Image 1 (spheres, rainbow, N blue to C red):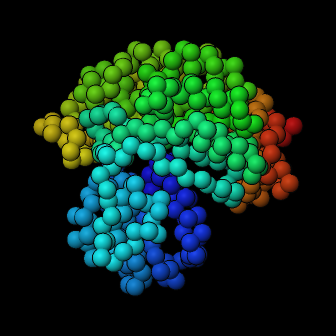
Image 2 (cartoon, rainbow, N blue to C red):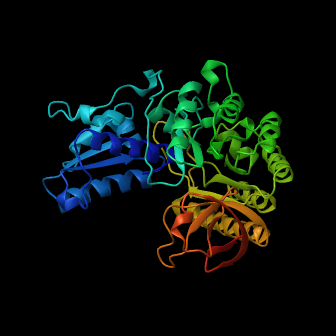
Length: 419
């Protein structure tokens, strides 16, 4: 469940279990273990995790259920009150999950805030077209809506030699693109006196990866120096995901976000001028504690005038232990949903406009390893994050870079022609 870091770690868990003699089951009924790598960003994700574990036990009463990930880290032993959860294993322990299945210690969760070392884990999953590499974990910020620092600990960075080794390992396995993931990748290198730009310079100089893509960034971390470097890069995919959270200064201040709407709107405008149709995504929380109707109207108007390509939005979820949870002016659920739907509508319009701007242009696409299930045509992804369907069924094109013309959007799908 959850973020790209969790997805990356889940693949490592699977790979290590197979290396230790286990095999993947086709279904729950025939499995001995059911492992859920959870997310705790919202109450909804907590409830979904509990539902999935309960359902697994219902389908197979003898299955051993293992809850790990951020929910396990936050709730710890309290989760063992549920008779459908057999093991609770923390974020630090999960990458060696096979070592913690001890009947006498069904809760293995260490203090994540004391963890200082970055977990190094190799992954050679060649079934995917694009490789993910976690370069950072944890977060030093204390945003008033977010529980994740308490689930992931302080910011920790992978060393440059390890990162370069992993990228070159991916290249040797045929990967053309790597995605840098983490909980807060803009903090990479902070404890070492380095910056993300320092890392990217090393990646450019010492690896042969054809393309790389960055995870979510705080607007304050996107410096002019970083943009100028990326603008000149032949490897960088012009795809930015900005962790904005609100488009109202009052709300941003109450969230403990230390930038203004004017600042990041100007940044977005600058990025659009510097790159050729870059994809600019963002996160926005609807209905944060204390967000009045007038505050939301400011957010709505600013989002409408922004030059974003797409907006990922979700209703604010109270997380106990955060400052936001203490507020006496919570927005009711119906109103939060209304605001969420308005932002979704803005996002849909902006994404349609972004696709339209791309129609008729020529883009490099990375052909995926598996064709579109319905049509049989090969799929691909452009550098600026358009997921397209090609005009070819040639399986030999899989995992190659091709030049293609974006033709049209039809029934929500984008079609292109390989040139």
